[in-house]
Image (tube, rainbow, N blue to C red; front, top):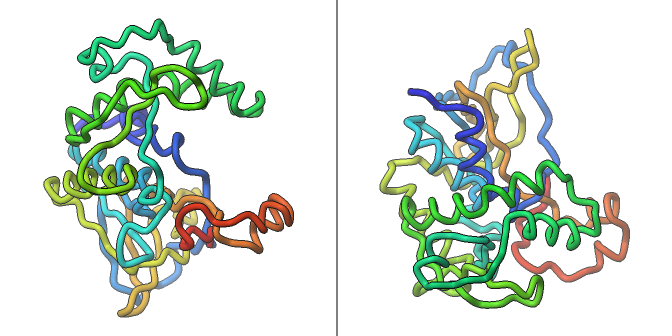
Length: 264
């Protein structure tokens, strides 16, 4: 098994296209004697949005044994409320349709920086732009996601849009349906109603080693041999945190998406 950090990052790159970082749970020392049931996997992933499930699928593809923890009883994050559009410059789907846009990765990068008014992290923005096509091709070829291509979005007025298509509406719900189906094929365990409450660490070096979760049965611990991925979204449905981080106007905006993304 030869799984590099770059390989995992490539699998999870889509997370940076769709989600923000959540406030981290408290960290507990693994040195403390535990009385809770423990479960060990190669990788522990908190959050069943697009970032979490894609990371799990990519990890399984590379021979790892991941587990996904979700605080709700189903995939209830912002992904299932989204339109399901994703952007690419020169994907195989665009090529098959004969689209000749004259688009480039550099133009994509420049447009993303314009959208952020120059506030986007240049290195991360370029990473997304340079890996967008490979990610979309992977989702199509390996996961089985079907796309409609060629539509022009308001910004930018280029044919980058790839709309997830299928029976489910909106497209984000259909995208999650494809991903959950692939996860089932790969026998990736998804633990529902498992709310992460603490990160566990190695007291010798501070390395995060696992997650303590609260379930209907009580507390349990999930240990990740290779670590933990936090993919729990942001805090868009938490008025208190929005007020603290972005001000009252942001807190008063209607929630567009899931009301369970609260950043705890």
